[in-house]
Image 1 (tube, helix red, strand yellow):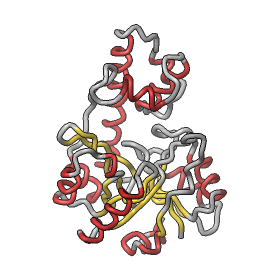
Image 2: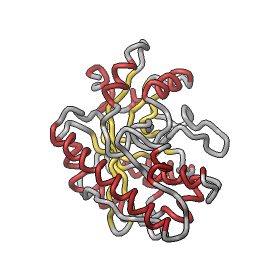
Image 3: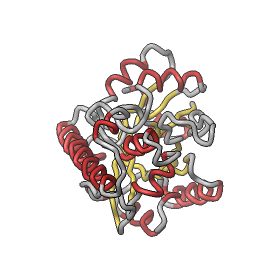
Image 4: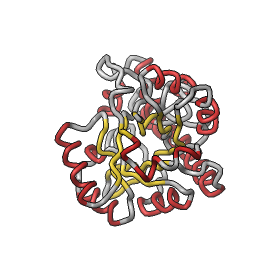
Amino acid sequence: MKFDLHVHTYYSDGILSPAELIDLAVKQNLQGIAITDHDTILGLNEAIVYSKKYDNFKVIPGIEFGSVYEDEEVHILGYFIDYNDEELISVTKNLRHDRINRAIKMINNLNRLDIDVTIDDVRKHSGNDYIGRPHIARALIDKGYVGSIEESFEKYLNRGKPGYAERFHLSIEDTISLIKKSGGIAILAHPGLIKNKSIVEYTISKGIQGIECIHSKHTAEDTDYFIKLAKKKNLIVTGGSDYHGDLVRGELIFGKYFINIEEIPEMRGRLYNV
């Protein structure tokens, strides 16, 4: 059973609605997906209800949290979370609110660089009580300041760049704990993008349960290395596209990066409850 365990909807920084994403997943011959929007669970019930129109297709309720450790962003995925958990609802609401405040700070930083972009320009690309850096990037593209989301991040929006502003992050330990307390499985996202690889070992020491070994931005060497590491540490091997709705270098990556969920007993048995 082919599952893409890392996709985003317009409830965070994706482009597609949950329904559009599920329809596309079926067309791409996937048997299931995990919706892992950043810091929000708002689209999960909608997605799971809509998925019932298809026989033999499953949506795993998920989330993607961002932490910072040793000045690097570390993303942690949670699978099979209870999205009715009161603590999870409260924490994600606060995180979404802080993202909006951070966006305003970043827009002010850009304005000081004589870049004419407003919160209204950004909101044209966002919705559902959420603003992320890709929304600011798309506004910069609209105004002609950059030609791509990648250029936006490289020039202005990455950590250390002139438009960047910090936001509140849960610690790695608190993120893993919150996921587990809500009944979920905690997985380290795209470790190939982490520059300081000792951080990977740190997350393992703090109780991470698996590694996203297969990812659209991993090299073949990355994939091979992290599969071997996961097996050595007796951790779950997962994979996904990290699809946001955009084409990547003119290609649709959705459907090309997946895992056979039948090979993950910790997940396979829980599919019947979603």
